[in-house]
Length: 402
Image 1 (cartoon, one colour):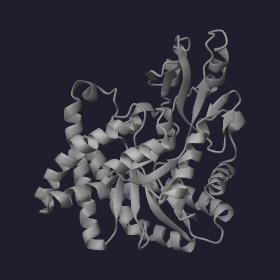
Image 2: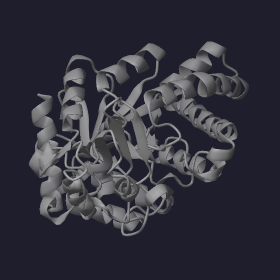
Image 3: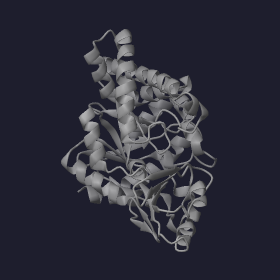
């Protein structure tokens, strides 16, 4: 839906289901209810998540044409996909496997190319479309640990192949499509400096050579192609966890010519740690309900001296709760964006509000997507009925963007 000049939606990865039949069933069940509450008189944009399995079966028979008819009948449209999770995302242990297969593999390339074919067929005329994806790989996997440069080289070549595909689509159909790399704590790309380094040391030089050979274009045209079609997905939660302020990130990226393809509106958990070890007991009591077996909940600790310590998951952080000098914890657990605090815990909602203030003055993307996918694993006392939850988040965004 249009909100102050932006396409605003929520990500349908919130709904369990890996097959196209399950995915379509969820859309038919939930989207009309949500649209009636937040966008009754205007078209409603959908942030679609298709698993690898669903991306194949939607192309079988009349599935895609039936879906297009359903979108038209329900005054809905597709402008963005979440192509980060490849396989199962609910009712199983996902953890670091959310990065599998990574960008060194043909499976990730084939899946993403397929998603772009689908998006190209669904995208309304005159609108740009984007697909968010993983930050190349996961830092703690053995190949990254032992031969990071080889991983970067393979991943970058595959990303350049995506840019080649999107260049051809733009030439043939006039559509501007972009792959939106999503930095995440403990991803191979997890902060602004790593993104900029990858762009300047890997994507631009390696991608330029590849595109010149494949498309017979100049250096300048190749670089323009890469920066037009390979963008960043700015997940507010992820950047808040690594203590990076929105305005500074946006300024640094703009200086490098790196564009934002999508902003994912999300909030993390935050806890200020008392100096007294005895007083820190409340932190353990408050965070223990968020320990669960499905998703990774990375923690970044900031010391009183400004030093950072990374823990790959919440249980590991809790084992080190009595670390001397620890001043603050930020935990990768997407909590409802309308919550500024939860008991004695806080959220990083203030970063979302800072993003809103920035984009009211400067339009750096057309795509906004609320992404709170953790409703199933939230503590019982902050769970709401799913439609009410999504509506409340979207209405909160609408209110604060005005």
